[in-house]
Length: 69
Ligand SMILES: [Zn+2]
Ligand SMILES: [Zn+2]
Image 1 (cartoon, helix red, strand yellow):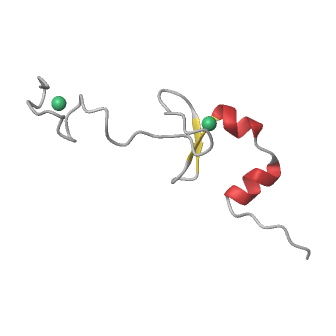
Image 2 (cartoon, rainbow, N blue to C red; image 1 turned 90 degrees about the horizontal axis):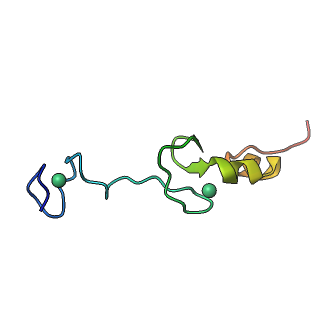
């Protein structure tokens, strides 16, 4: 049982609760902790994956379309 919230598993508001709201890289599913990530506010991409993306990948991900004017 947790010493902070006296629940098992931890209450979601407990500082010891590590289960909630983990951030995963959209590409490689790695858990993102203490690192810089790229995000559009919804999805997260780790630095490694982002750097290996091509401009076309990035454009698709952020719905940037290419058209003739
Ligand atoms: Zn707890
Ligand atoms: Zn990644």
